[in-house]
Length: 240
Image 1: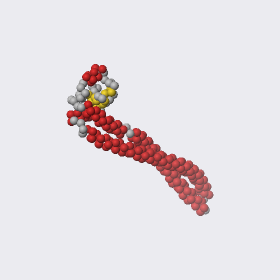
Image 2: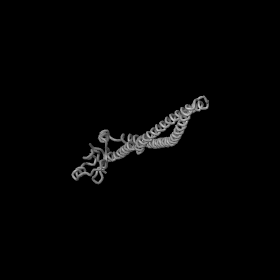
Image 3: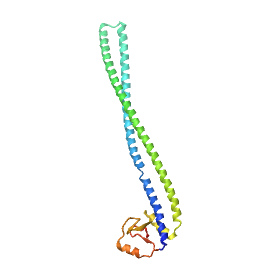
Image 4: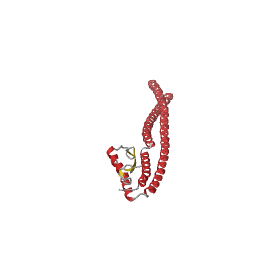
């Protein structure tokens, strides 16, 4: 295939646009915000799990407090009943003695329950503080995620703007080439590389591989309008 040297040279403009589009696609795939969001998502899961664990501890303590309060209420009711019987003055001395022993036992039990309840309530206060701290950590990570998403969306918007600009430029440039030359160029682009590269210092500008002497001799001997391809990557070699 033959094409005017100036026409071949303009392929470098098209290749520059395609190279920019490749960079934009790579940038879209490797946004640091996406990696940070993955890290924050993992951290958020851990923070939420921690908060759930602390909530379970708090619920267990609440159940313990209710159990103590119920038991304390029962002891007090029994104590009040025995006190009324004691004050009634109708019981024999032996029963009064037994009743007094029971009241003493109830008093000791009540004191133990009150101490245990106080201890559990103190534990609950600490557990509630831990839960609030865990909740604050969850909220902090969620706010970080929202901020990173905002930056990610801004970066994607910039990429989309640049991609639209490149697409417009590409259409304008590509429309000026002969169909056969453009088809050869596009076949390389579809393969995932640059369609053209300048030959500079014996090196292909598309794949950056240095050509051997025999290949360079063949290229130098070819007519100026001959369309040549890199033997390594098949990109069109543009000679200046």
